[in-house]
Structures are given as structure tokens and as C-alpha cells.
Image 1 (cartoon, one colour):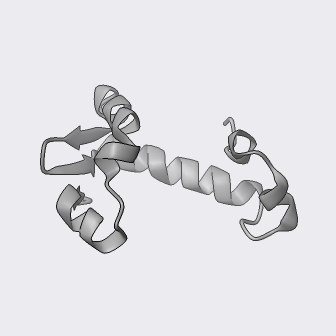
Image 2 (cartoon, rainbow, N blue to C red):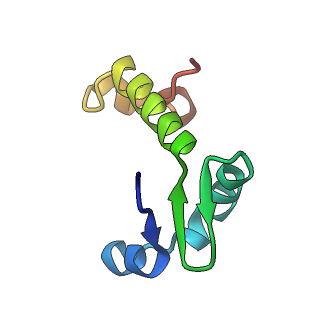
Length: 82
């Protein structure tokens, strides 16, 4: 199972603080039981990992990520609705 990312490590590697940019999204995932979150780190649960894998497959199967058609589509249209 995914060990998650400590927020400090993620910020050190990416220069991006998930708590500032993705706070509400992480809360929503935790409320659904798809993630665990505390002051130190964020981690997907088994169910959350399955959801993420399914969305990735749906997203990647829908259209090539490098195609010009993909790049022209609005962000909301890039995710499949399955």
C-alpha cells in the first residue's frame, strides 16, 4: 500500500505546499474515506488507490496526453465521466 507523502518532504522536492493549494480536495478525499490525512502527511487508502487507478485508466484511455486535441480541451473536459 502507498505510504503517502509527508508534506515537508513533498514541499522540499517540488517546492509546492499541498496544504495551501489542495487543502479542500484532500479534505474531500478524506471525508469519503479515500485518504488519510494528519498534520504531517497525506496518504490514499486502499479504496482511494483503486479510485485513482480507475480514473487514471479512464483518463489515459480516453485520449493521448500528448495529442493536440487533448491540449485544446478545457480541463473539466479532460476527465472522463465514467
